[in-house]
Image (cartoon, rainbow, N blue to C red; front, side, top):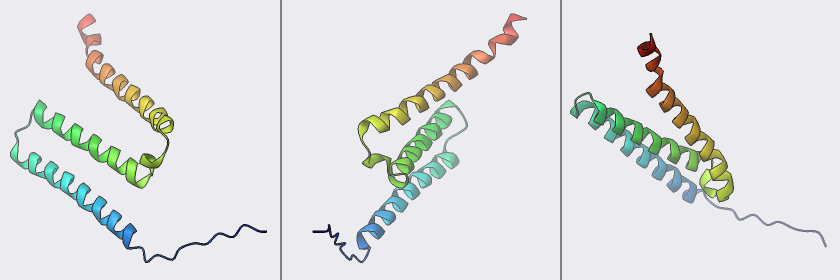
Length: 104
């Protein structure tokens, strides 16, 4: 006997709820970024908050739109760890990069 796949007909309301939920979460984080941009003075705290919120939005976008949160943990870690090492490398290069001028 042949395998017969029956697909349920849905109206898509669950998908629309998920899309709107994602929209409101990302809009809220972006509004918080705007609030911080116009209320805090320039400095290390402001930059740190922006970097943190940008990373939060990036992880949420990758999890939702690239469906990474539905994958197995080993795949998530195999993508996440190299990204962490690249960020660490960039920070180390920026931090230590100015020492070349102190040698001369």
